[in-house]
Amino acid sequence: MKRYSAFAIAREALRHHKGWERAWASPEPRKHYDVIIIGAGGHGLATAYYLGKNFGITNVAILEKGWLGGGNTGRNTTIIRSNYLQDPSAAIYEKSRSLYEDLSQDLNYNIMFSPRGVIMLAQTEHEVRGYKRTAHANALQGVPTEFITSERVKELVPIINLAGPRYPVLGGLWQARGGTARHDAVAWGYARACSDMGMHVIQQCEVTGIRTEAGKVTGVSTSRGDIGCNKLGMVVAGHSGHLADMAGFRLPIESVALQALVSEPIKPCMDVVVMANTVHGYMSQSDKGEMVIGGGTDGHNNYTQRGSFHHIEETVRALVETFPMIARLKMLRQWGGIVDVTGDRSPILSTTPLEGCFINCGWGTGGFKAIPGSGWGFAELMAKGHSPLTDAFGLNRFYEGRFIDESVAAGVAH
Amino acid sequence: MLILTCPCCGITGEETEFHGGGEAHITRHGPQSSEEEFHTYLFAKENPKGVHFERWRHNNGCGKWFHAARCTMTLEVFGTYPAQTFEPPQDLKDKITAKRPGWTWRDFS
Image (cartoon, rainbow over all chains, first blue to last red; front, side, top):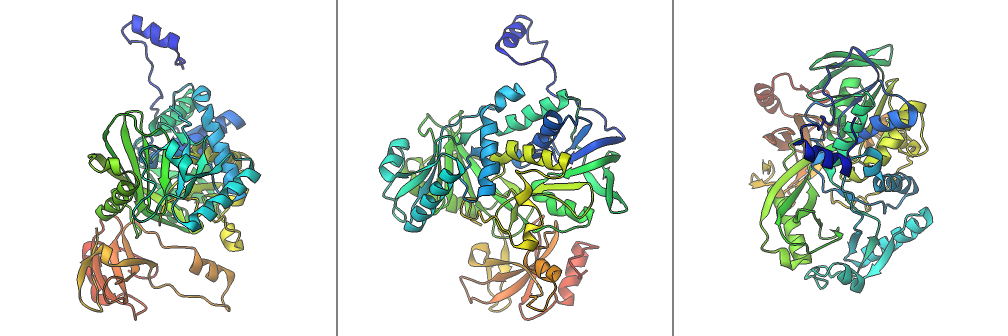
């Protein structure tokens, strides 16, 4: 793989850009791999990358039924933060956030990580208490966050309306090291690095069945034929329940559509990410100038990837209260993604009843921020059978009652 | 957006008039049950791509609970029926079979 650099741009400029290589190969599937990862979204590709980088396992295929990063990786609002309440969550999300910091250098691919800071607004007394508690918990976990006053919120976000008609802004939880990144680039960067290590990224290859022998996984049936493997990782977000059905076990997961929208591009007006969880809406400004807006989930299970009108209305109403200047903005695009929600709003990174089969799912409404950390931990789990990052997130926590309750920190109304 | 008809008061309304109450026909296992049964009751959810049975409440209306049969892929509502039953009525099952041949949901088909 030729490295991307300022020198490469100069060289290609001199020869009419004819020397650029394809970022990743599109190989025909082999008969057998050491490891198959189902799902070439951020989490699946990151898992494959760290399997290769940290454990030297490179005979890996990543199967994708659609196109690379076309699921939730390309549908989220790109927010990166790690201000969660419980210790296991703080560990994996903070690992992830810190990996994001030098991911562009690590992958030699500009993921446009922008640590611009994230504010979660406190708009009720309960929220003030809750976020102060989170700030204290984060201090103990070594995650720098602080509870800030409404005056400081106004300094950071001049366009905000503090005296909202329903819920005035009383303060906020501020994580200065949080921010955003280019979501597609994260998938593309990992795919390019995986391909460079000799892994096979196989798109338009839908898994139609899981092949087993004596309670052990032996491979998968796909729309491009049967492929064998020693270990199988399922990393398919909203469709996890569907794949678990094929493998013969059930998951404590429900799939719902979560939607987002972006406005027409405007001049820079807000250089932090603002989440307003009481009125429910969150917003940041992309490098192109579009206001990126996230909303709530549908109130019923579905796989429609489109969202619904009344949730757009709720979200936009909340944001117009919070930012009156956006009242006349036109919206350009709206879309939905299928998120996999667990009872305690924490992910599942686990072995499964089927030997050799591992599952990484349940990231629900906030998986993008976790991509590098999730890949790092899940790769260790697949390679060694356990990982300090993922041990608390096993499926057995639902039998043992060891929940990791993040229903507040998840930040999206369900 | 879903259009649902409340079988209790007969009024047809759109989704915001109702509130989803999750999976239908759950057996509520109590203190005498096995760990597996209790775990299944609490956590192992039906999450099908296709035909699904749910509980709904007519929140901004008569306030009564009822059941609905729905497709999670297309959001088509096959029908609604009263809450006081352990399984969907046969005519609704036939209607679903006509539209989605070979469907299954837990023990129903």
